[in-house]
Image (cartoon, rainbow, N blue to C red):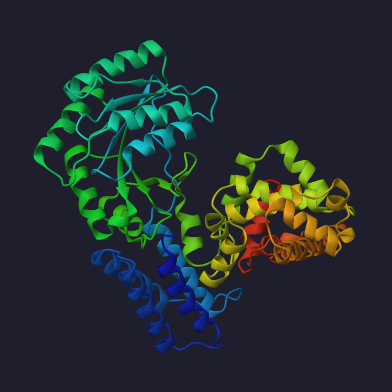
Length: 479
């Protein structure tokens, strides 16, 4: 995951600082030096790091003692606030044409993920029933670019306008815009050609398309894996086209994350979306404050709740909440919870939103609750009789042997599943008791992390209280 190295380095630094009852000026200087090294290692532009550290140092030197925070917490708060500012402070929405059709022009280097982003963006836009997206295939140079867009368009049920690879891209856009109007499109997404490197021919073509289309949004697509080069790409495109937004793709890979911390600062162009998986729903709105929380190990419970609400119906969530604390909570309920969690996306992405998660915990949880192992769990439970699912205590040696044979799994895996189930049931009982006592379990403990642990993962974190309290008022946890 992007920011993993930066996040670990910063969290270790502040953990060391937090162990001291009192901190000296030298302690703060040492911590800030570690912050500087962490940013540079994460591929953050040197000029950005220099300005960032100057601001933090000045604030740390003039730091007032707040009664509600320890000195170490105050340093963390300063770094958090400045990280947020570095990435833009506030969310910036997609530009919309209130009086007519919104046109979105996707630009970037070859391989940055423009065509895939077109489909992901359309999928996201289609969640509003009044939105009718439309694609224009204007990349006539990359082999199979048009075919790729057409294939993706089928998956999201959106029409594509294309004239093949022999027509001038500017003419394709001209006719495509007319076709989009006739179709009644509310949003037209123009997939333009990329190049391995910036060149005058490419940029002139894009300038001509911009003049013709007068796009509402010029979205620069940057591969987060490109590191420092991402900044140069952004500056060059911005100089020629005046881009209005940036999308960082492949943020789920091994990217160090420096691009996200550099692009906004050096171009003043907001990051609007981030690609978090290869799946069609793997596009998220970029929230600077939530990203700062994640980097510093504070989690992002609000995004986790929003993701749950978008993927699981209110009726299903209500039913799951009732079954969660039922006295006859059984293996069918346990399986349902795991399947609902699976709907919400890659497990490592979800775990990254839980306060206090470290690399070791995420690796353990990811190994325990990946899609493959959920499939194994399904096979085991589906090989049980209804009675065995509802009353797991009847599972003796002979029954386990039969289930192992029917599911193609081992008796050891069945025993491990039953252990996870017991842990889950214990957690549900404890949460239920706290709720009966008038307490919000999410405010009193790291129950979100604990619940993930009972489903086969490992989580926790002292930062859960603030975000969970804020997030729990916005909806139920469906799992």
